[in-house]
Image (tube, rainbow, N blue to C red; front, side):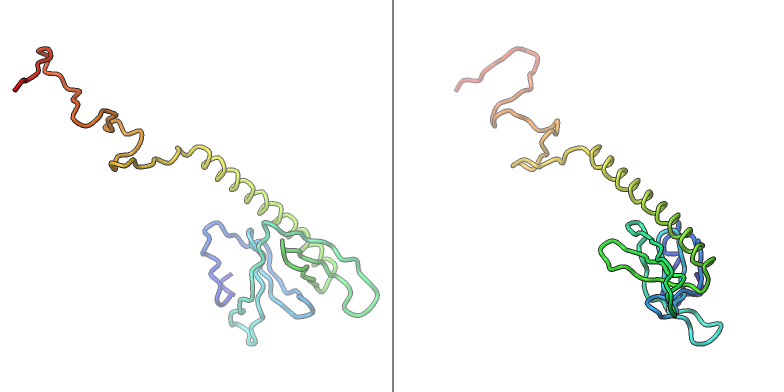
Length: 171
């Protein structure tokens, strides 16, 4: 992951590199880094030893990978597609059939884990939201409803007692 320019793989402490390699995306050679949360695509560096230039990251929590059957003809072998939710399918291609099997296997496992993790996080968030107390709204005098110091008595009345009975002063 330190091979990628303009991408901080450590921005997520839970990010783990699963697989990496050279693939073709739409016929263009691309360096791919499969992390547990996404597929990072990079333009290859022009000089050996330099970092690859970050192109994009595909979120795998709502993605699918599909095999594309080989066809007769130049460049129609070892292809598969990655479909990101809401985006058009991306056709990926590798040199050898074994590489295709490895990429599909890793992508399917990573997509399943990322999807399950996203569902767990959504369920936890929903559970937290349902356990939250209702919001407290201020009343006209600035005290909060439900505040024990908030008195329902009318102005001028007194709830305190001197303990000597009730006396009234007359003019």
